[in-house]
Image 1: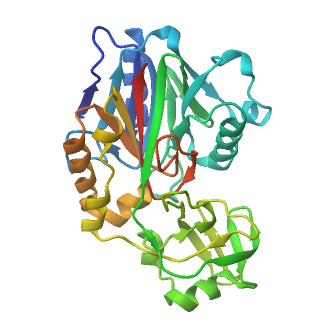
Image 2 (image 1 turned 135 degrees about the vertical axis):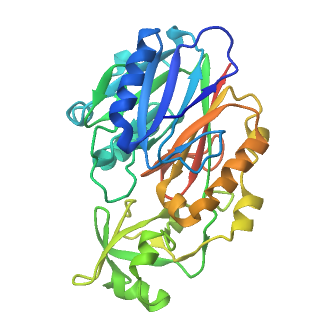
Length: 357
């Protein structure tokens, strides 16, 4: 087992650790978290469909990656919530008067996670970011628990770190690279994450009228996500909705992102590898005072890029001296621009910078 120790620039002892581990290594990760807890370090562990670190390796399915930070224990709180606690509503008394939140959900409750994050964003804080823990495959059932907090293994739920916004700030930037290629189309019938009709025609029939047959490899490699063009920002950025599955009997398309009735969507075209690198955010310039970064990259992005995913990691290494660690996720919660509105995203690489004030 190789552990990539990613130390922050904070001096002296470390108080907080973000540990990212391959989904099949949950038991080993829990042992390691217990060891760190024994040193008085508070730990949040998240499983991924691979890990991300400054050390380039072909064994990202096997290695651990962690970010160790020295933040005053009075300026952050590590907490876990069960689905029942989330449904009953989170109580405000445990939170700082002004806070930022970095949260991670088990993959089986990503719907609850999206709703919770949207509610907290709209009612309590605009600085709320995170992602969904992941297996090595979108459709793989968790072989073991996917979240850890200190010495406690979390079977289902959400783990989060609340930061005192007066002392510690979070900023985010997200990027995907796909382009819209057709006029917007209206979703006329939808149930939760499943589009049933587009422009009053069966969704699959309508989409394949443009793309031709949506073959399994297109879905498996996340090549052709839908563009949620109604949510475009002032800089032309819009979120994507990755296709999870299709049903040829009913003509339905199920997504990894929720779409509303009446919302406009469009088809997409993937970026070239050259475009990806040329347009990749210059995170060192965007976050010059970062003390550490959490990288949340969609597993669909890894499927699309293959081994070329390392091009983005090299770009990160070249653009910032800040330490970073991360994982491949089943969904990201971030903003395209610093100070922008955070939202649930698909197929992005989302970078969350942790900064001291």
